[in-house]
Length: 246
Image (cartoon, rainbow, N blue to C red; front, side, top):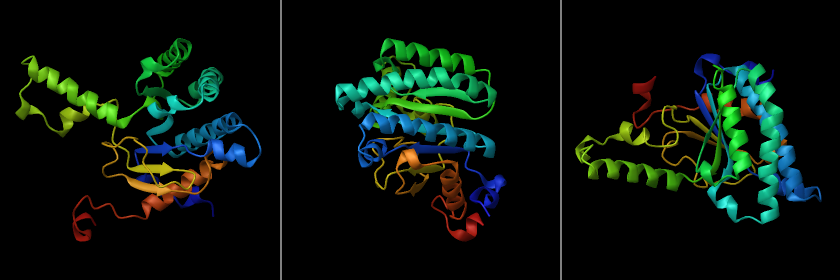
């Protein structure tokens, strides 16, 4: 029996976040340039997005390019940006067919102008879709996101628009990039690393963490299903005891 057949569709996580790690190592293991790994990682993205949509997952957020990734060699950064543009253009028709709405979070103004334009065009075109919300975290830093939210609220206090006592978790979340989205219940990281890497630090406070040794270009929908099945076997207590949640 496949992992998909074992999944309880009534207990799906609404939001799954993924740290897609291992493209470079995958390519190096094959004697190729790191860029080769990024290209093959796109195949994994396509399969996982389709698999999530078929299951009925509402939100899928992919750590596509971190703020720290700008420090990589210029050749690799440029290749990733070009790959992002070409992938968006190639995938729009499939996103429309599969009713997927594209979204992006991060410091998007840091993206090259052409890349930013193509991304915005795809977001606008798919905005009519009502299925899976696919969010790309681009030029993303969770610490910067949290700091910016704090600055936004402090500015409102300074301008007399808000009292410090009025600030609560909901208001803080409304100032994050992910405002309006449910927090992830499941975070998946590939490649055998056990780090969060400055990703959705506020949002994953109560997420279940799932680590796999598979490198991202080898990760497919069956691996997603395996992670979700593992998630469904866990008891989510949120600080309570078993008797209170069962």
